[in-house]
Image (cartoon, rainbow, N blue to C red):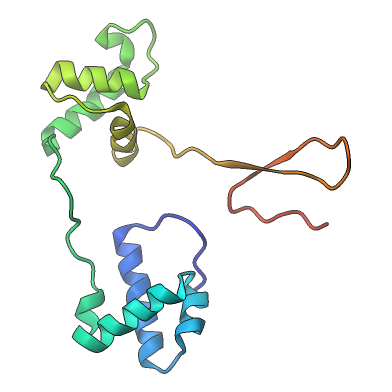
Length: 159
């Protein structure tokens, strides 16, 4: 099970920890497990300590910590409906939703003020926004060459 450098859901992270625990319990070295599951050796060491101290349950997913949402589930559903109606329905000149516009709409509708960065995360969580691709530019060894874009995580072309 090779894991790429991508964001995993909480369920996927738990599955990875449990698979790694199985490997560790069957005698695999921490280094081998770290390479196989795409984590640092420090992480593997922490998993092994947890496994030895409290068993497999210590590696199971726990409830996420952090501040509870100020929006209710019904309000989040309503945000999805607001988004589907388009920004024009909220008095904007076109139907394009930006994080600033949706933050404004949320404040007007629910009286809850959110920073537009948080609204971007909220839009992503509600499936209203596709993740951005991060482009990495590599320079060729040839003088006068233009940088060639590639999507992060994409293999470099053979030299």
